Image (cartoon, rainbow, N blue to C red; front, side, top):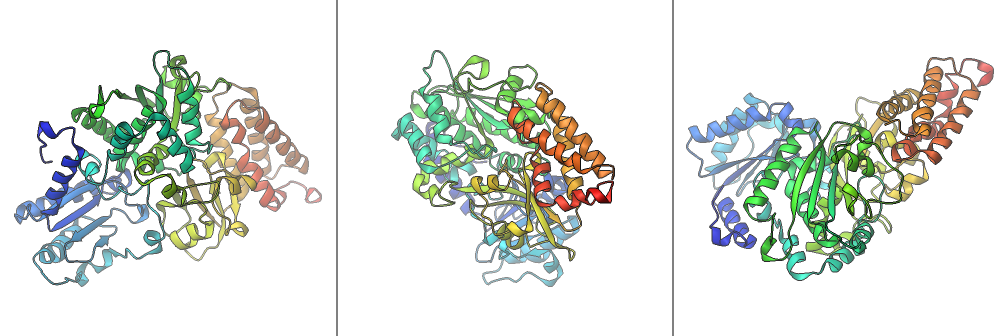
Length: 557
């Protein structure tokens, strides 16, 4: 990393120019996915091998190796992307040490010496993955713009791609009220599940008189099975989330920020810690940031894996050192939150959108999506789909486009049966709804939710009763037990599902399931209990025949 003169430390423009000039010197940049998924598949060794090759061949001045965040197509990892001046970018999939050695020897090293287009040799063609796949071409990257393109542990690379310019704009050219208004105008809604207006939440927090301090809290407690959007954002572009948090703090008058991240995300936590340390070193945190009156600091708290702590009041209790249980609202955290002080809770993806909105404008952001669901959404596309991974698409994109075009459809000759959205709190979307646009209102109409962005593809071999039981078993296990509708109702529903699944249920049990589910949705204290029945109700609604087929008496069917 190039050293920056102390007298230029506050000039992010100079830092960006210096870094860009440094990068421009290289003829070749090799980006190696170094996310949790690719690390588990051996990307540490791949990075070491590539560094050893360029050292041995003494081409350190021509080739730079960049350890990046998630490139998206997780099922094909480890991934490396080779960018050589004068050559077409090439993405290599499922590489191992032998493959990388061949790629370096037979393609990269000869190509950097060539002034003419250099074709990828036959010996390594089997590892080439086309960048023209719909998986790449049909996405719209806003939040994931930097993921896979920068070293997330290098603050200068973030600045070289426009990082912290939005913070500078907010602090030097906008009032807090103007920042709030811009976010309101953009139509950004909370990406953690509820979909509440982000600008409205900030406005409510900003209007609360400041007695001594306010807090901004980033909810990184992502607990849905199959979901890893927030983890990947923190691993691949932590500064974007920090910058969004700082802008939010300026807008509402907060002086301290808290990241709440689950301890099962060690790499995300490590990169977040390094990013905060880099901000402090560059005086982007602390007192009089960028020479203004704005003072702000950030701390991190680790969650112990309780799903209920994704609910904002339970999360706040956990930060305070208490048991992570929700409390009735009102008062809302914007009035009485962390340690009884006004607090604004936003999730990782929500904050990662903020700097882009301020730089490009609310109208630009609102040009994506639908009338009521603006912008883009990051999804973890998993399950029975050809190209599983992390994607970002405009709100309103249809299920068909996501699953069959971007995802490549259902593999192994199977047929698409349904898509589960919103994790344990969501519902199933049957194949007959594949042309439905994915947005908050449309999903709610059919008994599902956006959630944090998990999207699991289900093929025609799946048993929907067993699926509903799986999700309900998870939410019953994760219930904090504080309120009886969730504590008792969830267990009663699970017992009924177990009875039906074993072929011992009756039609009366189905009616009882619906009654208990209705009571839970109306009377549970927090979102966990209120949404826990969704997988059961949605499968009953669309696949009741599968329940009926399991009943004990044919006459009951």
